[in-house]
Amino acid sequence: MPPSSDYNTIVSDRPQEFWEEENSTGRREMRRYALRWMLIFAVLIGGIFFAIWWSSSAVRFSSSRVQQSTGPTYRVSGIVRDTAGKPVPWAEITDELSGRPPLFHTTADRFGAFELLTIAEPHKIQASALGYKPAVRQIGKAWYMWMPKGAEKIEIVLPSE
Image 1 (cartoon, rainbow, N blue to C red):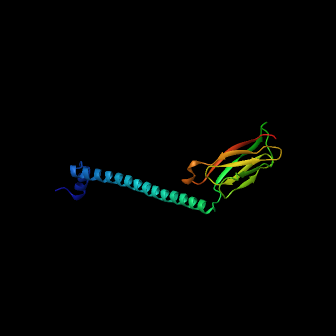
Image 2 (cartoon, rainbow, N blue to C red):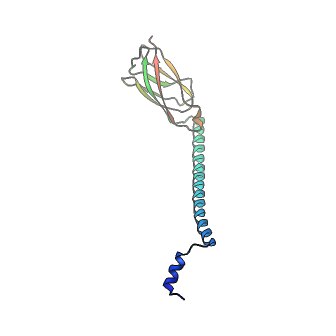
């Protein structure tokens, strides 16, 4: 019988038997499957949390509209110009008075630039300035019930009186 150190060397150099190969292959596959299932599970849980957040935001927005206590979550920015393309300084931009409350307003700066924080639902805003006829524009998105936040960039043209 050979010495034990030679025996260990000979055993480790020998090719693996069928049952040994299958065992290591199975372990590798099991790790891959476990990683895939963990990723699928994480995506599923993330999707569930997103759906809960999304639906609660929509319900919160809808209930605030019923109570008429909605805060501004939609940003409308742009420039007020005249028909010649020149900026109209200090123009007044307001939610149209025929809309549902609460109504918001802002004033353009000396370059005609403005930023109005308002409600995300589709509605009209009105721009007016001294020496110009008022102009009305449609703003908002139809998806406000699902994502009640957002932004929009517009240009308002005021005709001269």
